[in-house]
Length: 195
Length: 295
Image (cartoon, rainbow over all chains, first blue to last red):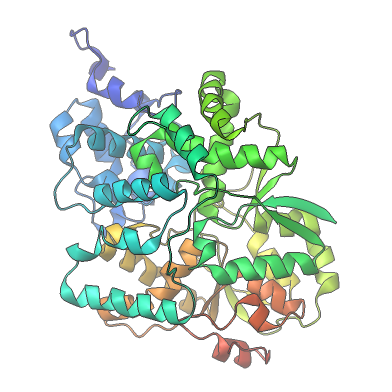
C-alpha cells in the first residue's frame, strides 16, 4: 500500500477521504484492485459525462492527487443508484464515497463553478431547516437560471402542466412542531440564532 | 387488520399525489391500515447527505422515533425515503455514540430512537405481508392483456438492505402477474432514472430517461409501472424534454404499482389519482381491454 507510506505525520489524502464516511465506520479505499467494475456498471460514466470514471477517481485519491480530485466533476454526476456499491468485489461503498467527496468539497468551498449540484443541495438544506419539508418552487431558483432559454421555457411549461393537474404546491408546507425541530437541529449544528 | 406507521414523504404531498391516493385506497381495500406519522419531516432526500451526514441521520431518526412511539413499523412508498430511513436505522443501531448524540437532539422534541420499529417499502408490504395469493383472491377486474414494464429503479433494492436479491429480483413481476397483467422482460428495470440529476445535470439525466423509455417500448410494454415518485416524475413528466433533446417522439404512460393494483381490485380510477398524468394512460388501458381509462 504505497499510498499509505507517507512520511508526514498528518493524515494522507487517501486516509482523510477513507475516514469521511458512514458516520464513523470509514471506507476501505486502499483495498481497491482497480478492476473497473464500478465504472462499467455506472449509468452516468458510460454516457461520458464524468471527467474521471469512478475507478480512475479512486486511483487519483490513492495517488494523493488532491487538487485534481477536488476539481473533478465525477461525484457531482453520481445519482446515488448504488450499482457500483453492490457490485464492488472489495466492498468499497463507492456511492457513499461520492457523497463524502461532495461534503468535502462543500466544506472546502472548492467545487467547479459550472456545477449546479452544490448550490442546489445548499438551497435544499436551507429550505428544510426553515420549514421541515421541501418545496419545489424555491428549489427551482437554484438551477433554473443556469438553463438556456429553450430549456427554461420547457421547465415552465412542465410546471404549468403539473399545476393544472394539481401536482404543484402553491404554498410551502411546514411542520407543526417547527420550534422543537429547529432546536433539535441546533443541538447538532450549534450555530445560528438562539432559541 | 394490520396497521403500519405511514411516512408519505415530501414528493407524495404534491408531485406524487396520485401515489399517495392510490396507496391509501389500495391498502384499505386489502385490509391494511396506514396511519400517517403526525408531523413528519423531510427524510433529507439525497441532498442533505451532501452537506452534513450527522444532521441527515438526525432528520431520519426523528421520523423513526415517532413511529416507535406509536409502536408501529414504518412504511415508505418512496424509495429514497425508504433507503434513507433504512440506513439511518442501521447506523444508529450499530453505533452507540451516534445514537446517543442524536438522541440528545431528539429530546428537544420529546423523542428518542431505540431501533424498535422496522422500515418497510410499500411494495414489500403488499407482496410479502398481504401476500400474492391473497391479492389474487381479491382481484375483481384482472388487467388481462396489459403489457407492463416493471421498473424497480435503484434505492428500493440498493444498497442491500438485508438479504434481498439485488441483481435478479422478481417481486415486481410477481405482483403484476398476480393482478392479471403481463410483465414484460424489461432489461433495464434496475437501471437508474437519473434521480435528482434531472435538475442538476440535466443532459445526462435526460439521456438516462430516454434509454429507459426506449428499452421499455422495445420490450413490448405499453406502460411502465414504478414504485418511486422520483422515478415516476423523471420518466413521465420529462418526456417532452427528452423528445426535444433527442428528436424522439416518445409517449409512454407511467403509473404507480398501487394504481394498477387498485384498478385490478375494482377501485375507481379517479380515486386512484388516475387522470393527473401528463402522458395519458387511457389508450394503453383501453387497448388492453380494460375500460377503466383515466379522465
